[in-house]
Amino acid sequence: MNVVVLVKYVPEPRGTPQLGEDLLLKREGVEGALDPGDEYAVEAGLRVAEQHGGEVSVVSMGPEVAMAAIRKGLSMGAHRGVLVTDPALRGADVLVTARVLAAAVGRSAFDLVLGGVESTDGYTGTLAVAVAELLSIPSATFARNVEVVDGALRIERQTEGGYDVVVCPLPALATVTGSAAEPRYPTLKGIMQAKQKPVEQLALADLGLVAEDAAPTQRVVSVQAAREKGPGEVIEAGADAVARIAGILAEAKVI
Image (cartoon, rainbow, N blue to C red; front, side, top):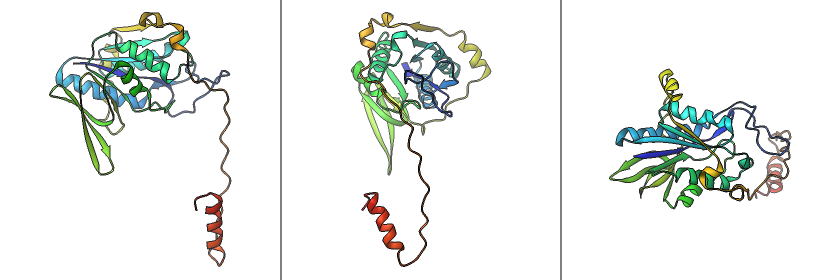
């Protein structure tokens, strides 16, 4: 069972992201880490590999510092890593990123691709399914549990009244939510072993892609600070209270 997990290096998730003069997110020279949501996908991949045998590869795209995300996945137990880094990818949008990751994943045979639901720096929630489309494989999203049963992918998707079971043939892709199994903590032994595990660092040319393939279709042209909320209004009980509340709701176009 060859499992691939898509991982991303993001600026410190608990901090405030910073934009550069080019209106792109600063990823170098700032604190960063493996996206917390991706840790659940790594854990799911490791469990599948432990149950059925095989290896887990972690694949990422980003600047040189993104290697930290690869190393974190390896220290958790993944077997090998791939980082695609190229100056032409600066400012890549979701489609470009999906194109690059799909090319990286498709270089070798695989059975299952896993990823987080969305990143903590972009929140588009569309990358993983775009990768599935480019790889021409089915996708099963928002999994709280991932299994391979009788040669097929089986996931549980949380609903308000319980959960749905989604089954699709392999190879396939699934996105894993934060309600899945708690990610394992890297041990000292795992951290030391991660330094010895194979990692490939690739450029666009290594994937058979050219600069035109990395040209974004979207870009940020301006950024404005969100308007601060004004003070609230306390309405005292009285003869005019109901009318005042109705007026506020009408102004907000709620009624």
